[in-house]
Length: 376
Image (cartoon, rainbow, N blue to C red; front, side, top):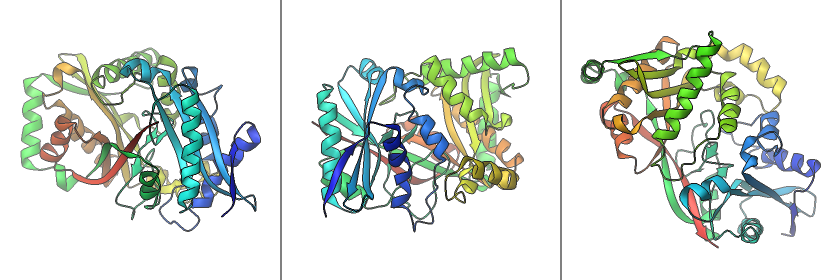
């Protein structure tokens, strides 16, 4: 097949890049179309604060008929390299027909661009960072993704690995149901931990503006402390945190955004959000108006939620408080009408978190996402 690689250097080409994603999922019932408005916002180098310290270059492959048959983004992240003292670049937003030549050429262009930026290694997929949608789905292709999770055809595994990429790290997703976590043992254990640490749980105060801003600052502070040891972690800047918080505020249920306090001092947090992918999957054209209309129809019919983030300051990371936060979110989720929850993602070597989910909460590991790496 004849094709050429196009470097995205205009808004028109960026629009083609974004909308080309529909080319690869025409007959896939489990694909959730992104909202085009959100994708444009994510890739807007002037509005997304991620690009204050990072760069991105988009490419797509076009055949003789003018159809896009593949795409990729090459990404630098200066804050990552400063944090981890390395010289790594990233790839993301990868889509491709099942053709190794097209995939190889896309990776070649992305890698060449990153080499020009002085990078000697590539990690991906990150869309565009670890704080966004991340990883390639490598199993469980029979169900739609939950909110802010990736989804892709199974053959992408071969395309990426045949282009010279090896596993860097796996990320796990766990499934929780009331019947799995609400056992006598779990209820006794979390009650003991609450008493031992004089632990209280409160939700985010969205009515009192001053308290809300204080709580937001607390979330950011705990998150940045809690995740420092984690592989690939990069602290959020204030601007990035606020950018993401503004988006999540649009769909958040305040009762599912909680702070754990020991003797009235914040030590941890948990955030769960309704899985709006349940209705966005019906928004076939990815229109903002369609998403808003569907939200009005299905807002109170959503069956699941995603436990999006959980953090404990280092002093309490082996205390069992994480299990209490999961339990509390589960109870609040049931009260809100949800039937099940996904807790994701968790690094494959984060043993305390995995034990907290599998042993304390009887959660089922049901999806795995993979990050790949390659020296260039």
